[in-house]
Image (cartoon, rainbow, N blue to C red; front, side, top):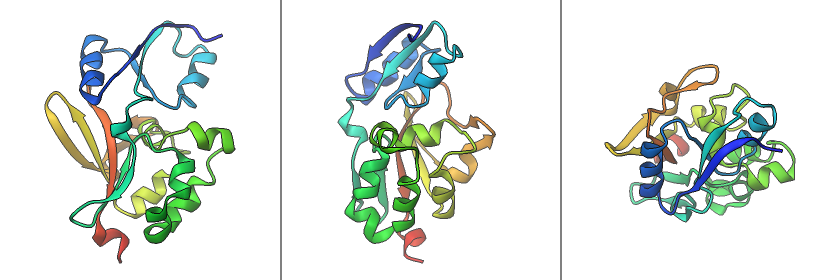
Length: 178
C-alpha cells in the first residue's frame, strides 16, 4: 500500500498555490504514474500530496492569437496523440507521445509530470527541446516563462521554484513553421 501522510485536493490553480504555500514539502500529483512508483518504493514515505488532477484550467490544446500552440500541463499523452492541432502542426510530438509506456500510462500520464520530473528518460522532453518550447509557471509572484532548454539543470533537477506550478507548454509559430 502507499504510505503518505495526507492528500489535499486543489479546487483551482490559485488554491493549488495556496496549498503549496501551506504545505511547502508536499508533492504535486496529477496522473500519478511517477509519484505512485516512488511511494511504492518507499522513497516518499510519509509525504503530503497536493492533487491537481481535477483542474480543467490546466487542460486543453489550442492555438493562441500570436499563433503559438499552448498545451495544458494536465494533457495526457493519449490526448496529445489524438489532438488535431498536434497532428497538423507538430506530428513528431504525436510520435513521442505514443511511445510513452503502455496504454494505461498514456491515459493517465501528463505532459506536465513528464517534463517536471527532470528524468533523462522523459519521452517528450527532446521533442520540446527541438521545438524550442517555453514553459509557463505560476506562483504567488505571478507568471514566469522559461525556455525548456534552461529548465533542465541536471539529471532529475529542474528549475521549478518553491511554490511554482507548471501550467502549460508553449511552442511558438516560428518554431513549428520552420
